[in-house]
Amino acid sequence: MSATAQSGIIVTLTEAAANQIRTMQAAQAENAGKPLRVYVEEGGCSGLQYGMTFDEKRDGDLQHDFYGVGLVVDSMSAEFLKGAVVDFSDALTGGGFKISNPNARSSCGCGKSFEA
Image 1 (tube, helix red, strand yellow):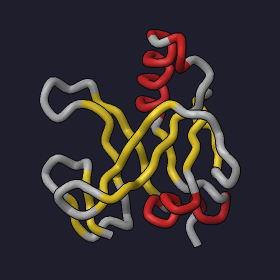
Image 2 (image 1 turned 45 degrees about the horizontal axis):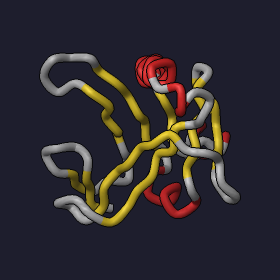
Image 3 (image 1 turned 180 degrees about the vertical axis):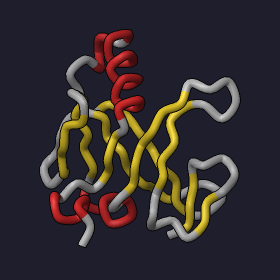
């Protein structure tokens, strides 16, 4: 069993992602202090797609903190996201948030949808 599974962490935020999220929260007062919700929903060109939003913790959510940023995942999304890593790059090409998901059998070129 991996260290991620042992500790119950479903999704991990890199330090770069946490820094960007804190910057976004500072610029948007309505999101200050809210955790980042990472979720999976039907859609996209591969059948499932990722989503991220600032949200309140709900009953049944799994929650962890990374570099001072709260992250929540609902139990349905957790099944698809076990071991995933959210990273951020400020590169001019290909920059933005990226989710590396070991459960994705294939993903599309946009990186926002995948097949489980």
